[in-house]
Length: 143
Image 1 (spheres, rainbow, N blue to C red):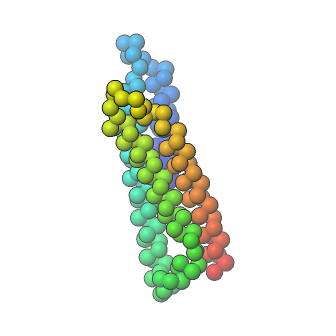
Image 2: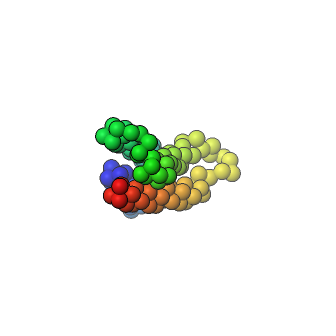
Image 3: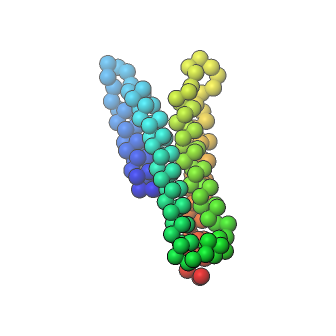
């Protein structure tokens, strides 16, 4: 998550720099678009790593307790919410990047028009991730 936030901060600085820098009277929007697509693809990789680490937490906790069923009894449905929301945020950001990669220049579909909806979906998934983490922590502490 720290790497993801650093990527977003770097991307915002790049956008700011491009807005004020011009080469030969033209903007650097192609470079920014290229960096945008790579940041979306890298965010998907970061979210996949987060999902794998959650799987490792599940395996280690199950081995520590000695029963895989006790894990699902303690955290209940919140583990599913956590893994689905992390996967959902990564997938939505990946789809946002891919709409720019596979854009046909002369059609009516403009990927930038749908970008806010992808971000809104990813932000909703991040909120669900935080909620699930808080609920899991509460349930584990009470166990």
